[in-house]
Length: 161
Image (cartoon, rainbow, N blue to C red; front, side, top):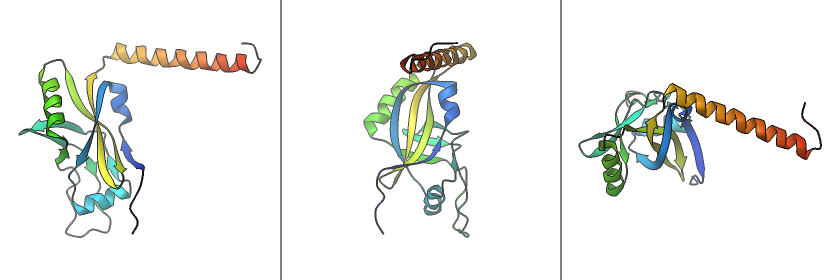
């Protein structure tokens, strides 16, 4: 069997980018059981309620839902079990120092993917957004889209309405 190459997206957490301002991202490996890997290869995972926290000096992922493998038997895994994330010790210490500063930061899983055949989780060190911040981001995005649309019209030789 040939080895997978490249990056294949399994699941992404679009709501996280809407609810949080992501300051820094980290790529972490994840400890999985055999049937979990098979289920992930089918794309059956959800990051909706997932979050990461420190537990005894390690970073753990809570609330990640990996559906049971359809062809598994009594060897199937528990869908919402706690999973250990694999990071270098220096990265863990940096993350924990920033989380403990008391500046309102949290660890949010942004996406899950296969990279060169290995399951990875993209973690974001993020600060929660208030509702007025979200409205401001939406207004800025709408303004950028309108500017791009108008520039496209001018480049094509058309005038605005």
